[in-house]
Image (cartoon, rainbow, N blue to C red; front, top):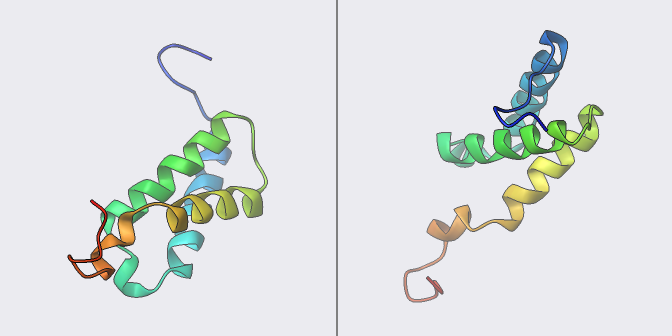
Length: 83
């Protein structure tokens, strides 16, 4: 990989933006925070950097990663949080 980062063609950027918009729209409105969207975008970029171009695969990978992460810890009472 290029040490300065990955270079994407304009059509791939449009694809990733559409996937991000679709993925965010699938979340409950209260979960559509900037932090969650940034996490989704990060996973979309990581998958695209590995060559993934299928929009469904990109969206599923990004959403699965967000669901598995701890961004939802604010839904748990402080007494039950592990962190």
